[in-house]
Figure 1 (tube, rainbow, N blue to C red):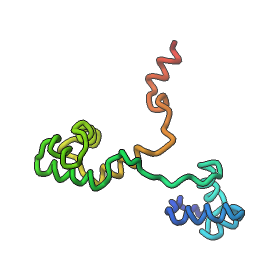
Figure 2 (cartoon, rainbow, N blue to C red):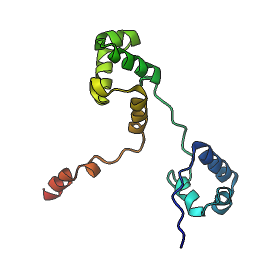
Figure 3 (cartoon, rainbow, N blue to C red):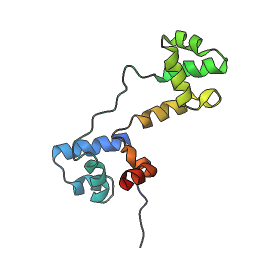
Length: 142
């Protein structure tokens, strides 16, 4: 028996799925477009309950990739956090937290940090107890 590997759909392919779904096409019809089974399409559509998710967008308060590049170049030149913050027009504590959150002086890379920021911003967040088994044990013990 030959098994297919899991397919990861691109944003364009997912957009096409949602368009066809909104037009009223069946899962089987949509799946035929991608030469896949209907369960492959159902997985994508059921993640949000059959409702098309909003396009992700960044908060205007969040640091941009360009600002992260300025931080990276400032760290490479060994500038102080206050100097970098004044170049950005941001608070020094914002720059400090950004650097600490993303590996410190030695490891900070703008493109890697940008990717990590998008991952951290994903919703929904897992339950705090899900990642802390020792807390679960403490609570169930009481």
